[in-house]
Structures are given as C-alpha cells and as structure tokens.
Image 1 (cartoon, rainbow, N blue to C red):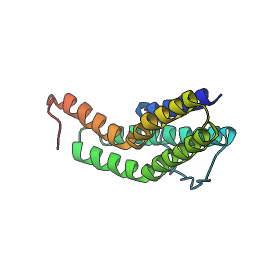
Image 2 (cartoon, one colour):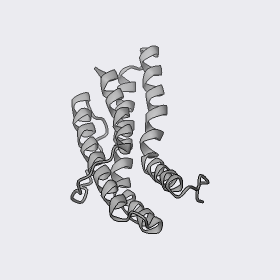
Image 3 (cartoon, helix red, strand yellow):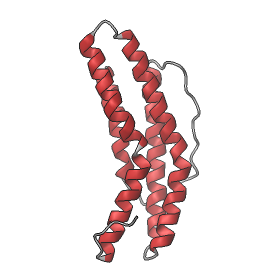
Image 4 (cartoon, rainbow, N blue to C red):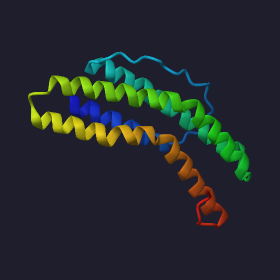
Length: 154
C-alpha cells in the first residue's frame, strides 16, 4: 500500500543515524529520475537508497573511529563522505517528490488522499534532504560532549 511505501521512505531517512563498524566501498550514485515512478519502482528505488544510507553509515563510523581524538580530521573526513553521498540523497528526495506528485495526480479527486500525500511530501522531503546536515550537527554535538564543551561550533 502507498502508506507503507511512504512510511518506509520516511524511515529510510532515520537510518542515517545508524552506524556500523565495517568499512565500505565507494558509493554508486543512481541517476534515474523517471517522470513518474509506480509504487513497485519506487519501492525498488527506496531499497537502493537504504543500501546507500547503510553504506554511508559504515563509512562515517569508520572515519570517526580512524580519526578518534582528532576533531579537525574527523570533521574533514565526515564532510568528505557526506559530500560524496549528497547527490544520492538529493536524487532520492527528487525521486520521492516525483513519486508523490504522480500519486497526487492520480488522487486528484480524493481530497483526503491528496491531503495525506501533500503532508507526506511536506514532511519527508525536507527530512531526507537534511540528512547530511543532521549527521554533521549530531557528530559535532557528540564531539563537543566528549570534549566536555556543550557549546556548538559555528
């Protein structure tokens, strides 16, 4: 069902905070943006995105571990990883937006469904696009806490 797909896609964004201990290969950015994805195609796209987020999480964890104790090196490594994955994150947000637009066009005569789709779009797309910034901010907060300094860096 569409609701399950929307929830799954939104949940994928939460996976960005999951860290794994093993290093991973470089990301393979998927550059597909059909005008309208059907539900099965979008679920496949969401699965690929989840794999990318999982891979990114492993890389981030490895970078943090490899640079433990060196704040500047840790942040530089994390920034480099996030920059490499940003096109995939933005591409998924674009695909999700296109998917919702297609679903909204099909639900144009159902105000309740249309409202749910627009609410999903308005809440999920910004969350997905903010993944890199949220990861960076969370890392800075963690590093500050570890250093005993609760004030965020600029």
